[in-house]
Structures are given as C-alpha cells and as structure tokens.
Image 1 (cartoon, one colour):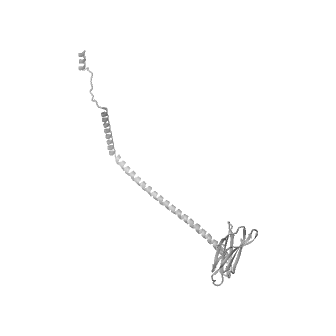
Image 2 (cartoon, helix red, strand yellow):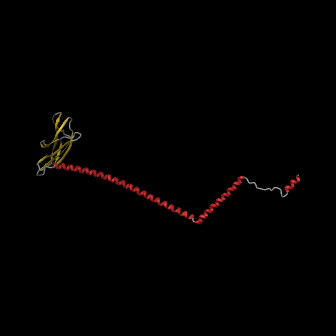
Image 3 (cartoon, one colour):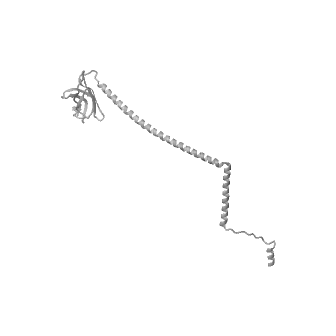
Length: 240
C-alpha cells in the first residue's frame, strides 16, 4: 500500500504543486500605490506634452494675459467713473449752495425794493404842491396794528426862498379819543415814544409805535412841533 502511494506521488499522474512567494499586505498596498502614482504621473506628463504639441498651453496663457489686461482696464475705467461722479456731486452741491445764496439775495433785494417803493410813495404823498415858508408837517399817517399799538409816520420840512439855518426844537404826540365812554386826551410822555428833540435843516422823517392805555379808544393822533423857546411852529391831526 505504501509502495503504491509512493509510485503515485513519483509518477506523472501525481498532483501538481504551485510555489508562491508570500508578501505581507502592507507591502502589497505600497506596490499598488507606487504603480498607480507612476501611472498618474505618466498620464499627466502625456497630457502636458500633448497640450504643448497642440498649442493649448500658449493659447491659455495668452487668454489669461488678455483677461488680466481687460480687468486692469475695467478697474481704471471704474476709478475714472467714480472720480467723475464725485466731481459732479461736488459741483452739484456747490451749484445748489450758490442757487440758495442767490435766491436769498434775490429775496433780500425784493424786500429792499418794496421798502424803497414804500418810502418813495410816502415821500411823494408828503411833498407839498406849493412851497411853504418855515416849518411844516407833511401828511401825517397813523394806523392801528393787530396788537393794539399805533404806528405813525410823518415828514417835518423847513422850506423857504433862502438858505435856512439848522432848526432845533421838539416834537410831541397826543392821542385823542374816549376812555370809559368819556372824552379823553392823552399827551404821550417824553421818551422813546413821546416828545423828542428835533433837528433838521431841510427835512427829517419820523416814525414810531405808540402804546395805547387800557380801556382807551383812540380816534385821532395829533403831532406838534415847537422851537427851542417852546413856541408851537406846526401842528397836524390825523383820524384813525
């Protein structure tokens, strides 16, 4: 029996045997990784060589340079546009300020023109039709304001055929009306509203505001001009 087994193992019909070298798994994985890395490097080298042969690399570089130039140009245009916009905004603000100032000046001039027209009309009404000798009061005007005060205007003139010396005197105001239903005459006391010193050579314009005492109804205002000796030289009364 043993002889038969020995013959079978030594004969042609004996089973075949394969001899393999045993490698550890980490070594096998390292070999696989090296193989894959080499393959990837070879593929990348082939791609670069092919791109260089086809001229793609030069075209890409050229396009990149062109795109960079375009970006720089766009940035310069943007900066220029921002500068222009800032300058335009500054000019617009300056123009608005100038317009506001001009409008204010126009309003001021219009107010001055209205005041001059009022003064001109006042003087025209006060000018005499014929020259009068000595001191005279021209067209006294008085009106009651909303707050109850009385505003007056008058022109005192000195006229004559010869040159006149400077006149020095005083003018006084008197309110005439009723108080508590009875006749009432109120000489305005001397001071800012009442009698004051008067000096003129040809003419002087006078105006002011008078306070009205309580429970008094003013019906007329009287103005009198007296010389240095106290003699009354001119008087005039205007109704309200």
